[in-house]
Image (tube, rainbow over all chains, first blue to last red; front, side, top):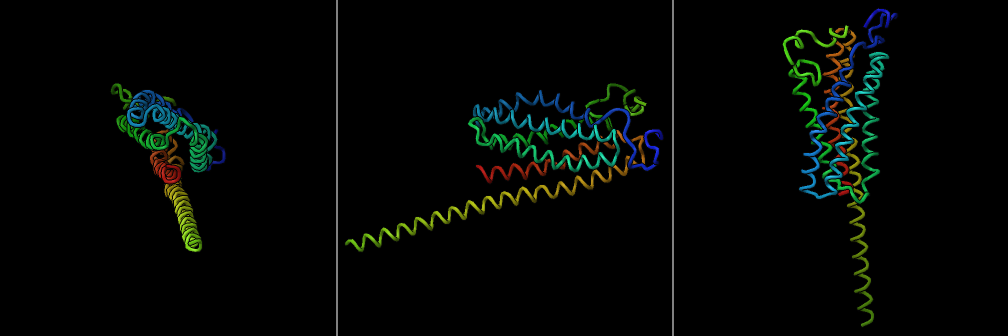
Length: 163
Length: 98
């Protein structure tokens, strides 16, 4: 945050500069979800048949869109101000819950939907992808999906590299 | 004989109506319970996310140079907290529609 970007001096009105870590995490989760997709398809197909596989894939899509939307909202509003980012995080939560509700309600009567695998996949993949991502975030002490490749990554955090 | 069959018919009809009423009451209770479960499940994460974001914004305002690190943690925290609401939602759809 440079003084030029925040002439009022109010820290809450300052905007974030440099890379957007939330979007990096979300895109990393999208990449990991491609690995998870076959597991979801086979797992759901084994227990609930073809409808289960389709429902599982749909639930995984909901989870991924949810992550990307959350990150995008944070990324865009963080460029405006920290206060706007806080508002986006809170109202974004409501918005995304509403969208998930709509996404499920719109298809619940469809012939290819099986609600049990859909619900289970929603929870399991959401938490599973997060824990998977957390391993790498923890491993690099902050930065998403940027598993330390050498000593230089740890010694120069990306925010410094971007500056 | 005719009177007896009329009585039996009336009793059977009333029993059927009582069963239908019980089913309707059960369905209403299930729908209310499911709605309440979802609503209650959304309150907790809402409070949690509010607290988390408030603290994160305060941290970013105090130390803008570590804003990226704080945002990373904040994003993951929001996602984990949101999982609680998702669990409530899934319980809702399973109770209501399965």
